[in-house]
Length: 401
Ligand code: HEC
Ligand code: HEC
Image (cartoon, rainbow, N blue to C red; front, side, top):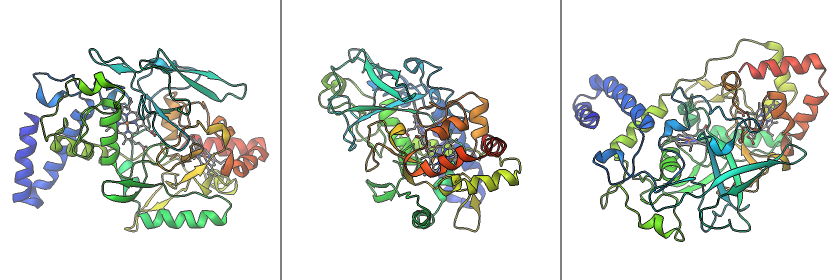
């Protein structure tokens, strides 16, 4: 029924664009919110537009990993059991970004019917605190010898449409300026169906748009096909025969997620509110710049229309050194390279007890900085050389973003 209303208004929107636009927009977002929360079911089911889950999957809905209020998942590595946490995704691959030949690009712990789940991620820690992942109860034999595991927490979805709007030229200009400061951020170019595009989303900036990210989530996390990624069997490889042969929700020539519902979901993602601006802290701002944090965590990026976005990221990849290198490359991002994490909304992430860094291993800002090596080593050294009072001012400022 929701679908029928959407279509009617889209048609109305075409007839009287100005007048109908706001209403159509609001309705799209409302439908998108419902799709985001929808618990998908296995095919075939009587509820045709809600089936097609799996056969291998990591969760049943977007909302089981990303909270409806769009904060980061609450998982903190070292405190919470990764095998129990649905807000975690484990990427599989080699250092040069090749997926595992049997398990594919992501671990799907859940399987439907006769299709066994792929197993659970378990972790141990080196003396340094660096996590090492292994596959427990593997459903399809051992991982390939050069396959490593990269655990990622589900990020907050707040303000993402602004990051999508930053002009490509502004990001490339940043990369050129940074090179002068001894930091060498580089764009993550992605070869996709629409040609070469600049990656912006995900911990390694592997998806250029929110639509591309949502399509990847449907395939990899939920096992659902979309127009962008029509493969019905999700991340099942040719070695996972039962998975490839299991029923899926698509009719020939049609994806499991109908295009209009997909468009509404993207509209919902594009309308997530922006994190509120931090309380003023002139001293904090100065220390953030003089310590070198701002070289990567750009306090502002232009939006191209005179406005700016204060997300504290440059959307570029940086080599962060061995402590954050988990052995999994992705597209052309090396295993030690990560996108500068946006720091806006950090106060909320900390308040809800979520871990920091891509795998949620750090409990505080100082803890996160301790893992900054590689290109960030000079900034970390300056951070450690601050007086205790200065360090507290800087940490309080960042913790309040
Ligand atoms: C099993 C958990 C899980 C599910 C289900 C899931 N996500 Fe995610 N999502 C993640 C993780 C983890 C990341 C970070 C991925 C990475 O960096 O590799 C992410 C990243 C994202 C991002 C990019 C955020 C950013 O800051 O760059 C968006 C947008 C997103 N997901 C939307 C969705 C949508 C829409 C759905 C449903 C179709 C969905 N996700 C389903 C875990 C999940
Ligand atoms: C060379 C670039 C670079 C510099 C310089 C840098 N960072 Fe980062 N920062 C990153 C990247 C990349 C990540 C994401 C790493 C990951 O998740 O594995 C990150 C992550 C973080 C996080 C965790 C954010 C989150 O959402 O989990 C915090 C906090 C942080 N940085 C604070 C700082 C502070 C404070 C400074 C200055 C002392 C600093 N950074 C300097 C690149 C940098």
